[in-house]
Length: 244
Image (cartoon, rainbow, N blue to C red; front, side, top):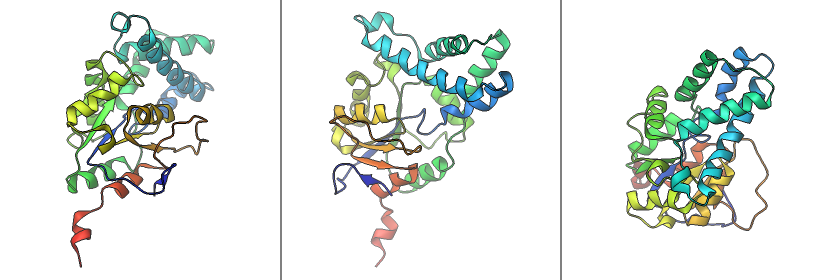
């Protein structure tokens, strides 16, 4: 069940947007392959890769001319991998690089994701994705995880040429759904993303899988939960509601 933070009463929402990486997909599932390729360094490489990937999205969006510096998420992911390997003092051969990059197309999804998405679809909930990922990345990852057909629209920040937490990236959701931000539940497993979405005006749910402490900022997600099943609390089953 979702814990309200800081509000004590849930507000009604009319649609739903998920972040993808870290929310639907476990970005650290690459650690298994990384460990095969670099014994003893798999977990560290997965962490360093992800941290640098997000850092690069922020750097290009915060530049004085973001349109000029924008690079697709796939390119930033590859650049981040190369940096992470060097930072750990490892050698990345071309074949290993391609195997790790391909793994990003086949990330594991968290175990409750598919049942939750199927339940939302059966309830007629408009549930989409708003992700930093490029459209081809999202399409392949969703198909690989068996999630194709369960989410629409699939929104990529590529259309705005700005990465989250830039307001232009979040605005893609309100434009696509034709709803005010407060009427959309934005769900992310990344605290920085949930807070960025809250600052934009979305009603936000942070999936805090690791039990991390709340960010020490004035703006907080409206709700916090330990897994994605909490989403269903915001969209009750109509059949059960109508049963006397």
